[in-house]
Image 1: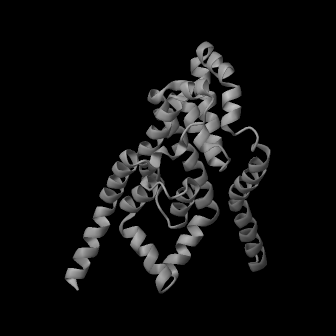
Image 2: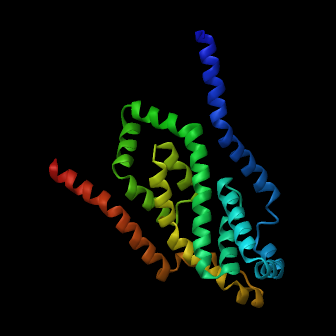
Image 3: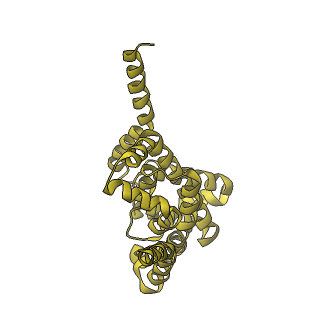
Length: 246
């Protein structure tokens, strides 16, 4: 094959690798517009009796449909992830609702992680390894503390979920570490919102809206911050030991 043919093949292969990520971006844009009237608390309130009736008549099918919908919401960064978590609690109670929520969110996150890594992540990671200066030092720092960093970005409420889904793909994190830290790291927040969802029946009866800011209440936020500190402890210890070594 000629050099021109090889370059053309590489370009074609490059675009093919980007197609899943491009598709996710397009679906996310379309979904943000098309679903804005459906992915709402009001929509859940209006359809709550139908959802409960379907669950009671077809429990396993309800679990499967719910989890598939949740996976698609996360995989395509569609609006409604928080609402889906509430729905999991509303339909299936805090447990096993939290288990369904965490499992579906993890599977959806793995989908977008794989698409991002396949399309851009491997090349970006290679370029960061080959670069000099600050960029290379940042990646080296992440690599040296991958478990701690991954748990930290999952536990910190201020980090948007889609950001913590994509960033690891761009710095060469392994799928195994990503999956484990995602599943375990989102449990605290998922349990909180699932428990809120489990109490939606009373909220509906009062004609009110659920308080999604509850995760920032001191009695909930402080334990989560404690877990963040625990995840950051290995990083802090390495930094202290490094200074002492200097």
